[in-house]
Length: 144
Image 1 (cartoon, one colour):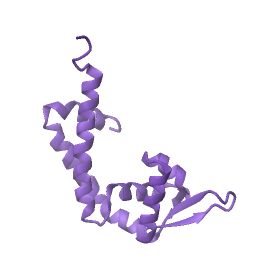
Image 2: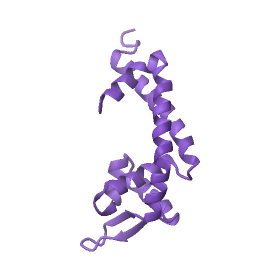
Image 3: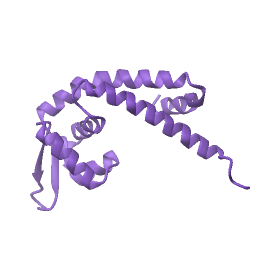
Image 4: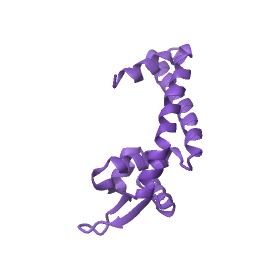
């Protein structure tokens, strides 16, 4: 039967997916100690880096790889926690923006060292696995 053995692309993709899953699990645990989920941390970082500290919910969704409904729920949770504020766009009453608050910046900054340390540790651990060493090396070469 032809096509039953996985090809090189499939094997590479599976290794990347495994690496992603392992690292995400470890990052999530590190962020829990700071009262944040992984999506929370990423949303706060995205907003902190945006012009004026905010963006449309639809833009946030795109930046995080979420659908707009999920991004809206995320923004609601962050707003309830006092980490973001939402407001309606003056130009287009249908557009809703999320802005990071000072509390949100502080919480993101407080969690960042733990996030970065855990990311490095997770990648180091994965690099010791022969099945994941290649994807880790490729990933680390992107911005070196």
